[in-house]
Image (cartoon, rainbow, N blue to C red):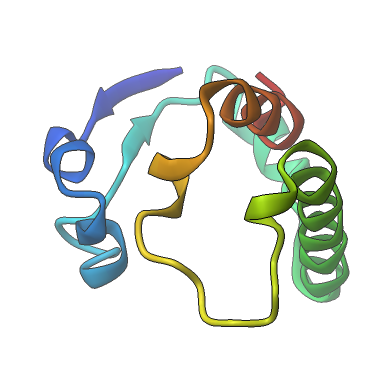
Length: 99
């Protein structure tokens, strides 16, 4: 359950990248069953393959849903999420955040 949202990060999303461990936090979350949630976290040697799989899935989805947003091998664009159409953003949130 989300207990707090960092309004500063909403007003200035670049804060997340500039100061992720202090002022760039996004949300505070309280777990109703912390022990179970901790067991379900991806840990150790499983992190890299899980992350690579997620990146591959994300690239495939973005290419299908919005070809103009597909990765071209260049540098990440600043404030990219703000340029994602709302319907694509909703699809991505449902897929990657299980919302």
